[in-house]
Length: 534
Image (cartoon, rainbow, N blue to C red; front, side, top):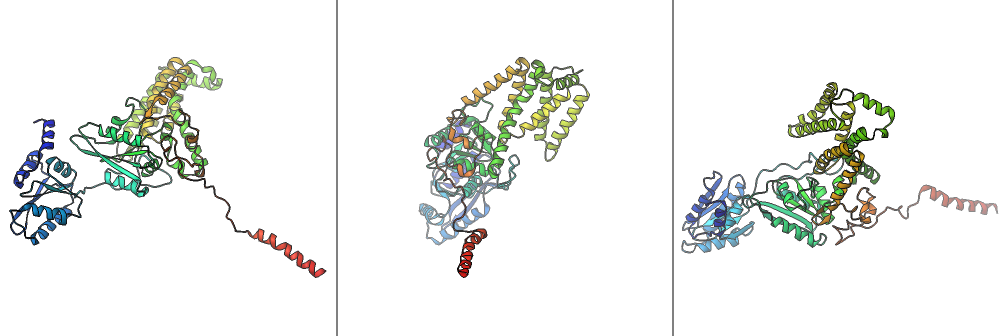
């Protein structure tokens, strides 16, 4: 049988009353898998056969030994007969294993689905049912700060590769019964678990239903990372720009849920997706909220300027050198012209060559282990830049332009957005070399139109700029003080827009300073002296 026929056969196959027939079926389906473990035991005075089926490496051995011990000891006390094995099954189901996370089943599909995630199937001879017990336990990585999303101030917790741990971390932050979590099994063969969390009563029902519908419609053999899910559920998979927010930080996910968004967790990866997402939110960082609002606003403004600078500065340099040299001061233009003497390539080719070399160094730095990667990126850029200038391949001005551009691109918090900006930068250089500043303006206009046309789960990607939502500007490019952020985002949190009251601190009432007390006591002294004189 091929893969599809085997899967369909397993779904339709039910358990037999004979335990050895069922064990043979399990062995035949799983083949000669070395990690398949079958522990047989005897229960009752009349030697009723039982078996525990599990996969080693996914289970908790102590839990399995405890379950088998409880079954053999408790059922030994009961007056059981081999002619009535159903009684043993009922006692085990209702009394002995009643405190376990267990589920009775009569088909092989449930058995395989559960033991493949670490649960144990209890079989009893003479009964065409099995008891599935939760005995999952596997090694996980410790909770630590995400390497790619470090902050100066704030929590240091990051997600790991365990779905249960990740959802528990969010539960610790949002201790509300309104925090609902649903789970969907994705992947025909791998059977991966994907969960999504939201605040019931705050998140729009249409959004929740759309997330559930898109996840249930995923038809893949397996989902090994959240990127698989992202491309299957986003509105426009062919755009360069991310339509979901991927993060490893618990505080970012918790904050998004409190605003009415939905968080999507994928078992086996520390990256959690937030939907819907807006473009301007990808340029925000946790430190914007951990510092006072003037500092957060200035940092955020610098981030926006740096992102635009990283896209258009190389193209603008090429456009000015080729088409608009009169825009530069005469002395600066003469220095650039003198430095370019002997360079065999045009300005556009210089910039593209250096940009390509910097991208190679950046990618190599990411792939190398430990501290070697960052060192290679810095030292390699310096050595290559100096060697290129010495060989007369590029001018010093181009090295400065490319270096400033690379530094500006590192300021973007979202790695997926930074990649989109780097690709757009090459397009801007090509248009700038062909049409001058008019080409740069055309790319800027085209980029704006493209961003305004995008949707994230049906929500406008460029809100609150397009469409214009004035009430959301308080936490977009700028950040107003916390007491003024009284409402949630209008589109996502419109079901319950108010999140706090204005809480500007006021001077304490009923407390007087020493100066006020002296001022009040002074007239009494004067009155006493006047009475003595009289």
